Image 1 (tube, rainbow, N blue to C red):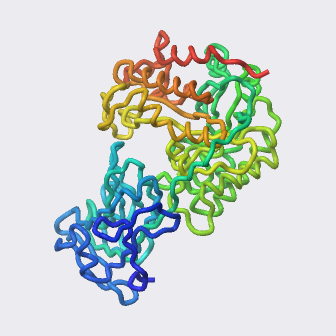
Image 2: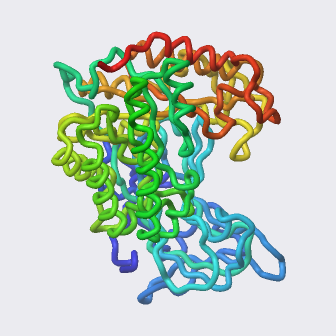
Image 3: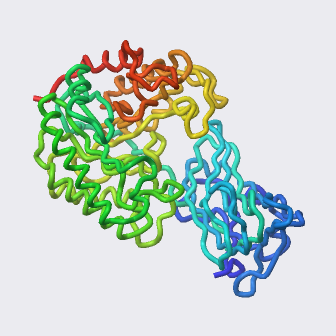
Length: 525
């Protein structure tokens, strides 16, 4: 239905004096825009450009058109609408527009082309949230994405247009609604015994790669003293893998092979006193181009996901070397169509299925998106016994991931990173949502991944690791370093020289740090 028939809500627009205060509610309209008059279009920056015009829309209404002449080569043309960000902080927003295109040229990058985008500015860095890969010629179709506004966001604007391409595109029926708001904290903390899934003082260990051998485990558990591993069920790579093709028969064949490898090495783990978290790193359907998990996009993948966990639970129930089941590594929902479960619902449904089959092993749940501490603010503890909640720690990303994903190198810790002073206090602040979640609900936390790239300047990586481990130890959390004998960029057995791909002849300071903590471990009885 065209927006000329909608009640236009402008609750969050910077151009609207009627914006109201108060808490946002799930489903609330932040913006509905149909471009039904020149006045509505004039609220947008760039609307006076010769590349922008009102045009005939759907069902007799008008819409906005943006074009860039092909004879000029790839170019940029857009309109932008500032939003009042204060009310939106901490919310997840569902953004949607109807889009039509005519001969929009294939752009140089998947994030170029037709733009329906929310640009958010915060001290942690800019975010550009959108659906990627839109170009070509097509009739009206929905473009959708889910956006998360950081609590410290300072500005936000919607962008419609073309980037690094040519052609013509039309936009209509733009809407921004509230998908979720931060979970309200309980009036008083939950008290009582906290379930951990084991009776040891602490699990300290590492995530391992898919090609791990018994000899590797002898080093990690026997020589170094780790009492825990996070076992990746990973197909090829992360975030993308052969599972992205959606061939479920091929997925079943891969999974069976991966589980047989786990079967072969579980006796070694049991002998060495290593408790295993079985981590489904590659879920059915894999991920789309935007790294959203396709279990949230198609019912056949959700059904297979439940089937996979029933299979794993039947296979390992009662096994003494298994500590728990990590349901999905770093889930990312994206835009969840009607009729499918979001992560909150799917996690609970899966946990119930597993618990019916296996009453003993821990159920490990990471929050969406990406399993970061801040994502716990939108996760409600599920009503299933024996759950441990897990987050991953890589903040600040510009430090931990320098030299990969296009990030510059030479970033030292502690120090000013992306305009913010990062030190032990900042690490504590980054973990605060996890600290509060544990305190509020009386649950156990597990840090399933944390790491800093080995070529960080000087001894920066060790300094960061030390501060993170201190924080985890003070909080009583179990933890797994990322990663042991996987990719050498994370390896504590390799030096800080990026080009040196061979293990160091003497233990690095990072290896020595981990082993000093592993030395405190107890073994399962």
